[in-house]
Length: 366
Image (tube, rainbow, N blue to C red; front, side):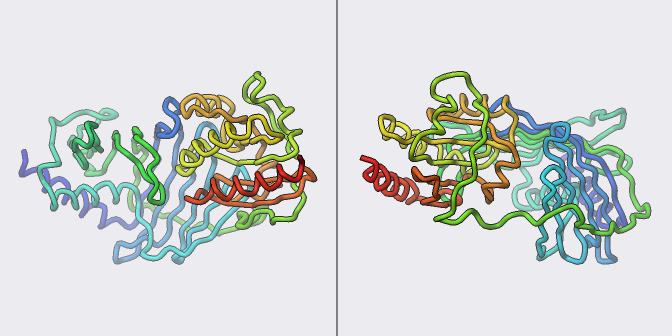
């Protein structure tokens, strides 16, 4: 059976490399590692055509997450990747060096690389049935160690259909300490499960004409210092004093745009808790706004991450008016509604910078 592992994987990879075209649908379930219990479910429809050297000539993917909460379309052609957000009507265009691959290719090629480096990490279990078809079954221990008394691991399960030699199922579970830009986020757990269905090979795929009518380019710059901030129209996510909308009347406000899925937000959350505590008796308030998540997701996130500052739900239109660039974004606003600080992303000096500016504004009030 051990001798069969490289044979099956190599045959699967050779089969994928020989394709002229490939189309399939992915059904997936993924747990948000920053918000345990919050699952994303959806489908991705993929169409790919290949050059004679097996590189991708054209690729189109449409992804629908949580019944249209997130709906995107990606089109790769002529070494450029066009990404369309069909909910926000925005798009981006990026040059992709080295080309792109299909997820099916990446699953098999990644497993083969690990097989060459450490074959003991790949185990073959008894054949199994998936969607009524016989499949080879592999367990891949990509990472498995004890660190500081914790079991850090990444385990993957791959099913390869015996007749077509195509991957038809993939699961990844894991746990470990995560980092963002060198800063520790904390210990996270991961869960991803995917099934690949409606696989069709070597059928004619027509390149899709790229049209940007009705879309606008994704914003790349925030509002400037000195500008008047737009009106803040938000909805409290909890019926309590902390999240009462009256906090918007605070003379000095730190408006924060966050996301439950962003890896940088866990870095800024402890800082915001400290700022909220430090200025709790001052005419100052934090207004943390989530616009890309449902109220239920935000509520769970507040509990899972022990947020102690006011948190609100805002519309995508509000996000557009504030010209946010990813998350987290920070706007410090003075008593006249003018922006004093406009900051994108987390940095090691952010807390000190904000504290200095807040103190300066509060001294002008007293």
